[in-house]
Image 1 (cartoon, rainbow, N blue to C red):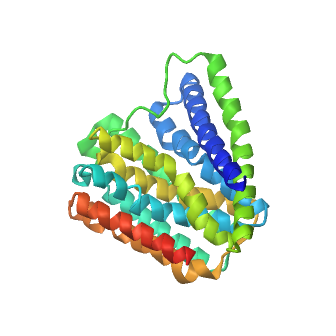
Image 2 (spheres, rainbow, N blue to C red):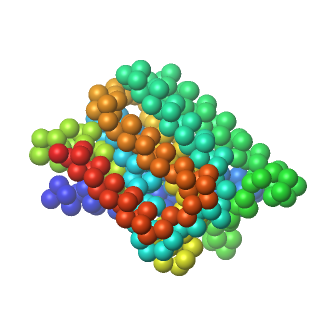
Length: 318
């Protein structure tokens, strides 16, 4: 039954996160907040809400390995699996989107995260540093988007922003309120259920909570991104997948662990310092030819990336 409870917790988390995004987006637009600000802030935080609640709950429950493992494992899965599996379906034309700036930001965030990890603990100092960097990145994104809207793409070198995810101008007020309530209630319930089940599974099999965080929890929280990218690949619209992965990884590292570090200090397992952090960095560096050399992610690369992820999970579990 513990696996059923873990699956149930994950489902509740994903549905509640989606409900919160829809409610928050439409409430913000109704209050007159510009759509581009909503896209860059509310949607980004809302889609990361499941990972955020898991990390906070894990820190409070005294299982920091799940909190840190969730983020490190998710970032690795985002690169190797969320890009690898869709590439098996169709070629991802990453050369059609300029992601060089955001990629360098992701690399910088990854190196900062690794440097802070070698302090041995993610405490309030590390949390404030990461959140300050995240705030600067968000401000830069908002400034670029405003510049683009005012002066055009050529003047600002920033891509057109799409309509915010979940936006519905005709959504009635009661429905917005319902989505917000479901999201705010469902997220902590789902996080608590998943963390309790994951901890019990770790004890049942005698494996560290770090391993459960890197595998079961990380893979579970990466499923929405994987499902979205696979559907986009089927519709021949997977070209934005690389940008989505980069943005998600930056938020995971800076915002999620930044907030969780302010809630409760999280000691760093030596396994992260000797292996998992370097795998995450190596996975990030694999993207260099796709970002800077204009290479598309074809089926061969899809096989390589997916196989690397399977190998990584096997190495963690053995």
